[in-house]
Amino acid sequence: MPKRLDRVNELLRREISAVIQRDFEFKSALVTISEVDVTQDLKEAKVYVSIMGGSTPGIMEQIERKRGFIQSKIGKRVVLRNTPVLMFRVDNSAVRGVDVVNLLDEVAELPTAPPAEEE
Image (tube, rainbow, N blue to C red; front, top):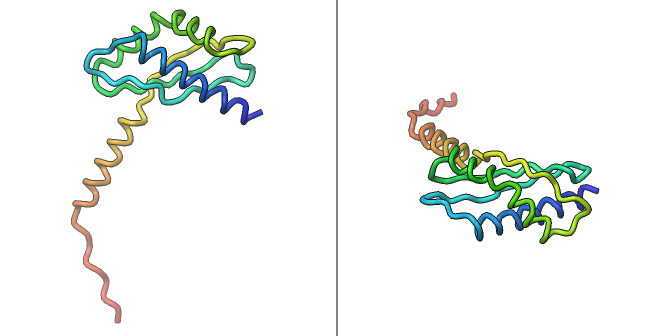
């Protein structure tokens, strides 16, 4: 069963990405669908949206307003018994990753203790 869920997750991710890319326009922001997590019964799907640049609340509000439109497009393109109810979430993993890399760079620049002398 997990393989089927993985395939459904990936299929939904690609299709939702295509709809967002084709039917939405975001000024000065890169919006991508990073992951989709469908429940076991295929009734609900958490859609993780990654936003680089732009106003995160404004973009998420625009996507939420058009949720029905996105669901109807997905329902026509993906053949499932029920089209999952899409719940959009902000994915901050890219921003957190950049923060971690910056912290590691700062730590690398800190002075280190001299090597211990062996007797």
